[in-house]
Length: 141
Length: 112
Image (cartoon, rainbow over all chains, first blue to last red):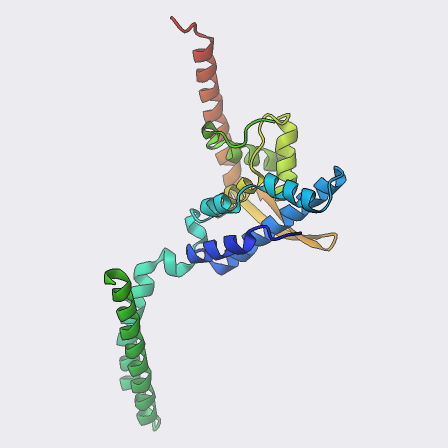
């Protein structure tokens, strides 16, 4: 069967913030439905392009289906459902908890923990600064 | 064939899906065929439209789904649960009230 637009649908749903698990399931269901429609078309005497066209027409516009699917809030990836948690609280907790854990860590490995922790925090800070710069470039660019 | 998804159809797919799934579990293609059959093809949905409706109903807790291997293909079967039955009863009651109201209005002479 020729391409049915599901690749575009998959991309659209993922960029709309739907969870990858949901996207896989939704696209698989639509593909399965299309196979049934194709078989139905063949049973009606159509073949090849005509059967594919029949199946696509009956299934409807993948973009319209995607727009409906993208409105199901509960199927969004958690990072989109809880943006404050993902973009603010968790990083803050991370930056607060890591030094606390390192300072309170006991035993002879304390110095190693501190070096490792400092390196991790430095790399996280550099990454965060780069992401902030990109975000600002998108907003003000 | 009837026009697919006219504007006043909002809520109708949900009602039909719940009603059909009250009887037995079904998968998407089977549901579309059942809708065409029970409505004598008066209601012909754009078939892809039922999936967002099914997924939203499932997420709201009205439906549950399970994967089933049939002839080497994995199908997602949907069935109604207790919350779905309550929702169906409410939607059915709303529909009957609105239907009665519209029917009464259509029977009233235009110059009344």
